[in-house]
Image: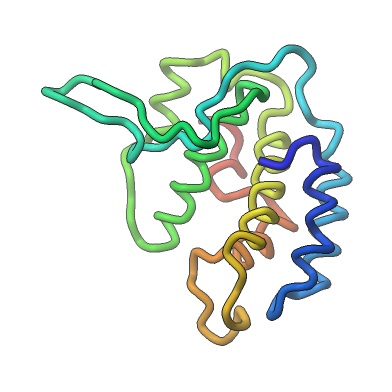
Length: 173
């Protein structure tokens, strides 16, 4: 996750060198990042998993037995951990998959994570920064209009310019 936002902004010229990337969308994303950059929470950082989602939780006999896949572990604001879940749920929703209310369950068990002011704007910032990085890691092999995979980050970036991911648009659960 390229944070602070200045790190994500430095990736935009790299993304602009890729074929099939709309420079207008990148410029608009850069502007949105600048608008959201002052939303980072004050205070300390914690150790984050960095890629938390259901596939990284092992369950044995109905109980969590292990958490795996720590290569993206890092220090960061506690609510940064939510963006992996939100992104995955958004991608699954675009593919027609529907999960139980994971965010609502998390909010019920960890209300402090969802109760901080400005969470919706921070998650929007995190989603933008992550999506710009993902475009570089997963370069498009065709234009969006020519059948680019529905979950490709170029589609996501276009959506994120105007609004946060749908799961976040209404605010925390």
